[in-house]
Amino acid sequence: MPELIRADSASHRRDAAIDVDQFLCDGFALREQLADFLELTPAVLEQRLGASCSDLAALHPGAVDFDPLRVGAFYEETVGTGHLLELAAWHLGSADYIADTLRLQARCAVGQVLDFGGGIGSHALAAAALPAVEQVWFVDLNPHNRAFVAERAARFGLSERLQVCRDLHDPSLPSRFDTVVCLDVLEHLPDPAAQLVDFAARMEPGATALLNWYFFKGFQGEYPFHFDEPALVERFFETLQDRFLEVFHPFLITTRAYRLRPAGPR
Ligand SMILES: C[S@@+](CC[C@H](N)C(=O)[O-])C[C@H]1O[C@@H](n2cnc3c(N)ncnc32)[C@H](O)[C@@H]1O
Image (cartoon, rainbow, N blue to C red):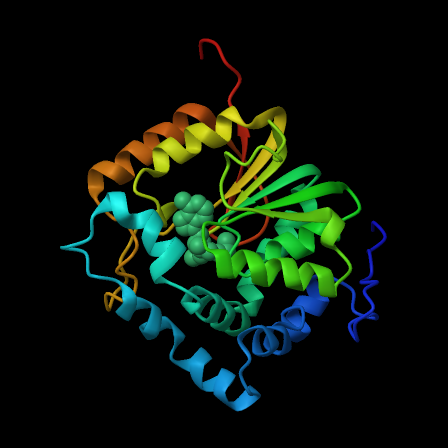
């Protein structure tokens, strides 16, 4: 087992290891960090977490009127801190599932790691604490998410290993990554196939991509912001199968691992 990096910040989290067991214990101090960041009492935080999924859905204008060209502004401006709460409720409530994605990441992540659409930073923090990882690049359109994750990294003494950026055009980003993590993001993008092409162009030849998707608005319509048009989904799978080769892993989760397909005839 690789040696785990322990948090060395001056904060009271000094003794916390950033590993799967710690995630299962407290989501990396998620409740207390979120309450501090949002300036909420613990009781109000619990109320807001309970309502977070419907609160986020209520911000969405609805599938019919939603202009795909405005989707970036939805995540960057309209959502505000809503996604922080919704993602926190999900990571705390489905901790076993998220823990398996962290276990998978711990097996695969090396070198320069891109966490695209990284949300509340559970994966970015965990990756930054892995000895085989040099640097984590957390990319997210939402400024509140970036500020929260930067603050979390500082609390765990991981600021140098975890940089936050708005988008892939940020000049501080490396031109290529050894690991791409993009979890529960592709269904939020108006052109997920184009995103796969962008990832492929930024991956080192031996790089691994960890990807999942959920092109579905939910059985009760609880995810109105997910794209689900059949043509979009078909283009996504055509591109995935054209550019990427799946690598088996033993975890029973929706996240898949991929390498780039070698160029040339098959
Ligand atoms: C459902 S959350 C997933 C968060 C995280 N990956 C996880 O698994 O918990 C989707 C995230 O993608 C971000 N996002 C949406 N569109 C984006 C884009 N075009 N570029 C970067 N981030 C984006 C949102 O702000 C949000 O944090």
